[in-house]
Amino acid sequence: MIHTGDITGVILAGGRGSRMGGVDKGLQNFNGMPMALHTLMRLQPQVGEVMVNANRNLGAYEAFGVPVWPDVLADYPGPLAGFLTALERCETPWLVTVPCDTPLFPPDLVGRLAHAAQEQDAEIAMAAAREEDGQIRTQPVFCLMRIELMESLVRFTQGGGRKIDAWTALHKTVVVPFDSPADDPKAFFNANTLAELHQLERP
Image (cartoon, rainbow, N blue to C red; front, side, top):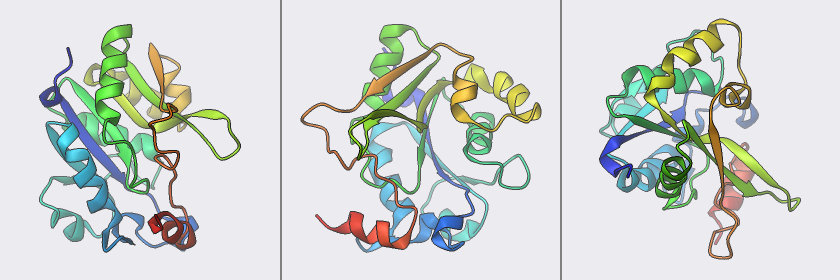
């Protein structure tokens, strides 16, 4: 059994926000509070510890009351840099990653990923969800992984690798679909633009 206390969560807020005009996505308001704070409040009950991976406005993120770590790799190389930063700081056997721009992710996300990882004896559990075109696709930024994978990720990124699924394909990965009738169809919608963010705010 993978216990909640065995899992550290990281909120990935280290991107450039280029599709949002270069703003810091995690600090954009969603229903009256910064999107990353919304994400933190949703993630906190699901894990033992939480940290934030951010590269700008570190003081604003530190005000959330959790540790904040900038990328260990230079030049915004993408989510894998956040994975690597968090793996280096993680003190529990498992790490789960969630992006700062998907504030409605499932309240049972981590439990379901952990259950599948345990059941399949997997190194990584990745969420999948039905998208607007009706297809179920993996959501690679929602990943639960063993911390032993750090060395593998160091090698992969040093070799120029940047795609999450190219790295997870090197390991025993279980894909966990979140598409039951009880699952919120908007759970994995991410806000890339301010218009999309306002759309998500509507009930």
